[in-house]
Length: 320
Image (tube, rainbow, N blue to C red; front, side, top):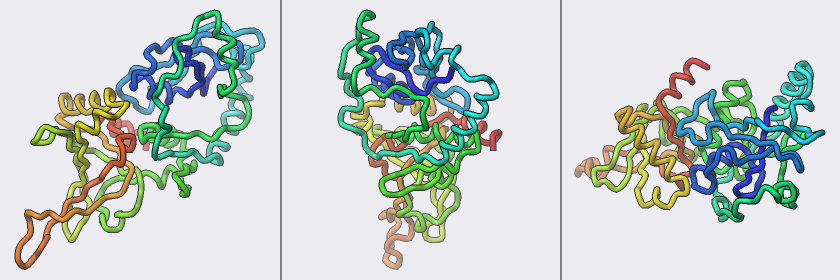
């Protein structure tokens, strides 16, 4: 049976597979099998598939896979699963409800988002600890509003909705509500001035490399944007000191390193923000103070970017 959430035994919390993936790469949890059924007092084992996978694609996103025996009457057991016809109806209803329930993209995390609040629990206390107040086990009621804190999470939702033709699903960012379809914008020949205040998730093929000073990474989009009657490739600078403070630095560095070593820097870049036009001081002359300009993206935090393997681009083309 498909599980939206599972109970993690290492930190005593119910969580989605997306949340488990982040906690794994932040070093807060380290065992893909340390999960249980979300049902109250049920200790059926659950594993989080692809928890340790560096790359995602349209088919292998992290998900829960139950493999233990459920307690009698557990609503998440196979015996409690609906019939095939009922299941199809339920999925259709869930798809409709998903479009009506806006996700929330939070631009900053709670201060304790990666803090391990408890130690590993003992087998004798599993049932009692699971029932503690504050847990949020999956229910069979209507869909709950989902909160996300990184572009990586939003990209995975976008891929899923794109595959299922649900890009009309709404997402709330601050006071603004828009659809997933309108949130994502490919980088290709738009006039940068028209988007200087337009916050989107901009994406496209890109090339990553170490900076000449060896103090960070520069990632440049392959496609260009217009600025002052010329075309320039937008780029983003990720400094090492910023990466060092990032809880998910292990995953980010591995993805960048893989792109550079295996694909000559080739990757797919997603970044939430707006393009910034910066005059090039080296191009100044007496008659033309700044005839050339750069187009940059400045990430407010590293949660606002996602690096994916080039293979994703081919999958997106095949599924379009």
